[in-house]
Image (cartoon, rainbow, N blue to C red; front, top):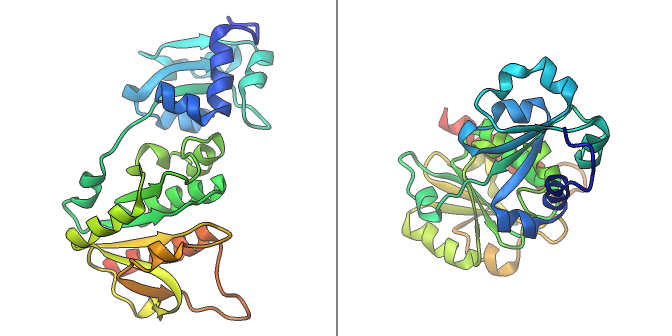
Length: 255
């Protein structure tokens, strides 16, 4: 049993939790809690760290998996939650290719995120996206790290199942959308009412930074402008809420 915070493995876990650069370097990320552990694809699990109590109550979950027991005190040091559940896993990152997201057998249903910064927003979008049936998420390189522990928690397991890619230049993506006959939509005050638009064919929705929205350069490359009708004096919704409205309207149309 590991009983010291100075153990090399524990020091590495702390580093992975705090540094996106280190996660990219080692091509792994951390998940915590029984649900995230149980749903993790076995072929992506690198190693699991658990308290004695958690292990004794869930021995069946550890079959065929490399694991290490740690003291309760050490687990609190590596946990990113207020009330640790006693299990943390190192998961191998999965990679998707942009071209494959654009060439899905069914009509692509994509989200394109530009410089989104709030971990909770990204996690919520991923989770809601799975529920709405999106086929993938494309993100600008300056979007918050999807493997940030706060993002991971917000996904509630969708991180394992929703395809996503980061790209260096969204302008190139916009050109490729046209090549693949995927209609791109950007929110705009002069846009068409979202409830009067047709999203049954291949489509991609552009979601911008929480404070500044989409850049003029990217929004101007969209094929169509759309808007969510609003009451009161509001001009826009939270990024994750707006994305959810668009995703579920598309889901409704495609049923």
